[in-house]
Figure 1 (tube, rainbow, N blue to C red):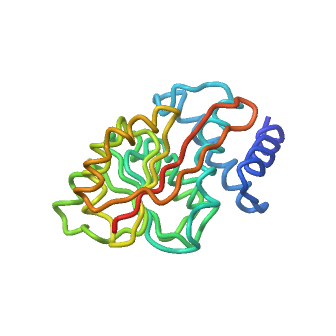
Figure 2 (cartoon, helix red, strand yellow):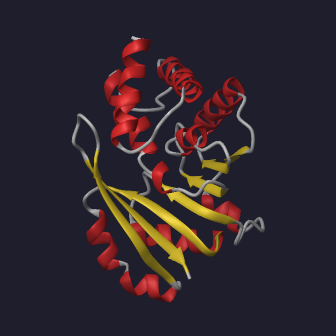
Figure 3 (cartoon, rainbow, N blue to C red):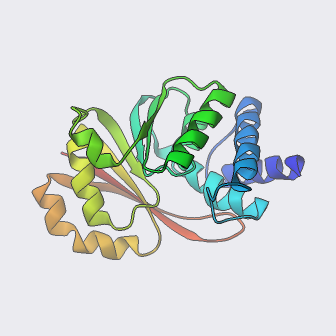
Length: 218
């Protein structure tokens, strides 16, 4: 199956504008295999089909990569089994990445994958995002990214203190994201935040629609 997984990764990443070298593909395959193994004991993802895991988790995570800077400090909140932060780190190794996750079993999994891949300049934080705002982490991040956060308004309130001036929140949303954005207009203004870019895309094969909202702290 590994050959098929690599082919899906290659073609899927190309379709979202990402070129993966052999080393990156090898690391993503190790990550995928570890996820499958851990998933037999712990519910890290509800998906069980290999193709679905690759497309809905790995390729979806990589879809943001063409829109990221070459370097800087990125924080992924509610990282879960590492999506999108770990695939981003593999595809953009120059980024300093922080993964924040509240569940201990997922923290243990993330640390194991980081160890296996020998990744540098990546930090795993056990806890909720509110913890960072009380530990002098405010204003430190160039990018805050959230893939599975419930709704936009609470996300904006949590993101604003952690971002540098000129830093960006990247909210990875479904088709409902536009409605959430409309409801959040007054909050955006009060937080001195502004939507600077919106990218609509469709995942390969599954054709699931995604929207990426880039919201700058002014």
